[in-house]
Image (cartoon, rainbow, N blue to C red; front, side, top):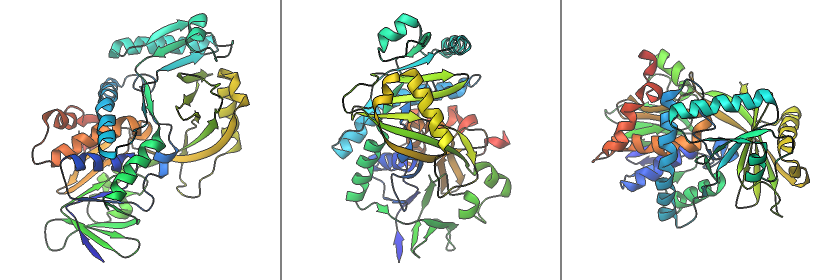
Length: 389
């Protein structure tokens, strides 16, 4: 079967769904192509929107982008709720980083200094202040770093709302993509799917980072660029607990123990997400969590908040983060009519909405200057051709 649409969005995780939402705002004709929309890494994620606690040292430009992305989430959540007539899952619930050892507290002190350098708000707390802020903390906690602008989104609630929206509009084509090729007749592109269908359009936006570009685009891009834009698979194991009696923490808690980070994310839905491990992986299918990883996650989490021992463990999940060569995202045009919006790594839910807005603005009849500026101002950490700079 042959289908035509103006824009083909390949992949329907948070990356592709964010693109689709912004395409809807400009009344674009598009299709999302994905065999399991809303699943994959986006389904497993914790949904943390954490510009303060996720920033790395000496990444000033990325820190600026993370701050812009966090501010943008307020508008994005309103857009989601307006279009879907359902909750976006966005929660303005602050975060506290905690330490139980002196060396780890020194790391929080160093991080607070870097936050001041980046103009990110955070506040060092002593032992008593930390426990006053979050009474469920272990008595072993010796200090914390309060980040009042690090929020979260219930990833599954958001994904469900967006998938249902585009399903209702018949804008999701459920099939895996096997190839993307330039139309032989001239302008435009054709996407071949696993079930034998062909979808043609003027534009293709690649938002499926775990499908390697060299498999999809065997002859369209030069070899060096293909290597650069191919995502690394970084495996993460993550746990979900059930807090039916509301005994757990009221703020998001990130602990550091001997240099190993752990996060505990409470939800309005009485779910608590505990994560997450990091492991470079060559395996992309049939994933399963390691017993040692689950043990480490539970040990670190219950050492920080002992009451978690009493909660039900309802899910052990495993997903693949899309890492790139330098762990920065890939957003922009690869060839005329062929775009990429991928590789957000640990910042998928935080960054995808604002980078999607920037990319879609470049395709819009009347581009928004503030959105287009994102592509220009952050080109050195987003452009797929930055390896040439």
